[in-house]
Image (cartoon, rainbow, N blue to C red; front, side, top):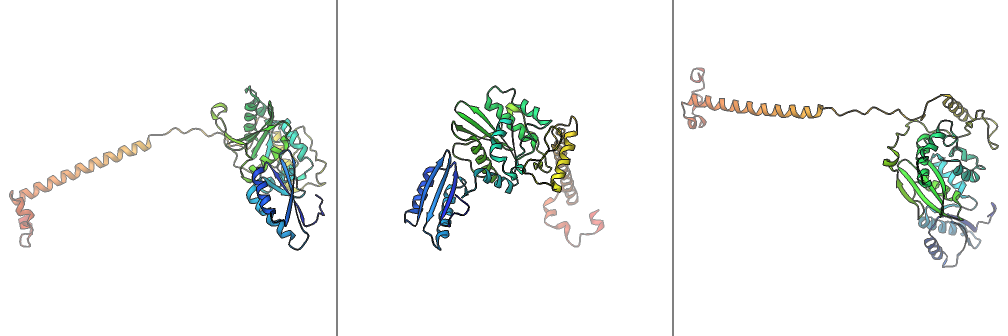
Length: 362
């Protein structure tokens, strides 16, 4: 659709949507004939063209249809008109202040074909600079999956390690399988996994998964969630509490700083500061896992709490014994004073006003 399209036409874009729910809603919205629709499909992406008669109410009618479809098909409906899935994913990640990295060069190449022409993409994707091509992280990420025989398990390990080392919000990988491709999108506690059949566009599926994850929305039907296998790959490492790494125009690991073709002619102060910080970090030798706090020593439990409980029990026992001794002494004194007539003592005989004097008490 062209930028100057008439106001009575609107394109709604869907990816990974439920066909039955979408089609049923469209038929209900267009049964009165005021609005017509036509669907165009390419793989898992569906474009719905809505059209109504030209008039002052055309925008209102199209807005109503869009709102109803958004309620039924969210988050599959990602944009309208000319906004592509790549642009929508970049916009959402930028809006939510989310960063992601690729766990290997093959995955990055698939994504770069969709993102390299979008200048804002360098603010949410590292293009390998903080992950698989980092001067210190690259070998660790590769070794994380080296011990795994199955490609999917190896990719899981690389995704987790790339996520841990980079400090990004997500790490992603796409590996080939017999049935097509397997996409792994890792976060803090686990990863989403989806098998993409042969003939489907894996790059678009990765972008849609990233978009949904950034929105904290459910993934498309057929995508599963799995926790990290702690027993297989060890305990999770602590995450950095410092600021996120800045991905805008980072220098390559080779040395001199080069700007992409679409970069502005002059750097902003933020970009210059990011360059200096990255160069200083890369120049520090043998300093693994930059940005993560050092492991804290495990504190062994002390016996202070049980000791306190024990001392409290002894104190209570001593108090009870003291009460018993004082009670016995009081009874003995009463016996002595009353001459063995305790009943008279308790009846008040020895507490009358005429008897309360020092001589009688002695």
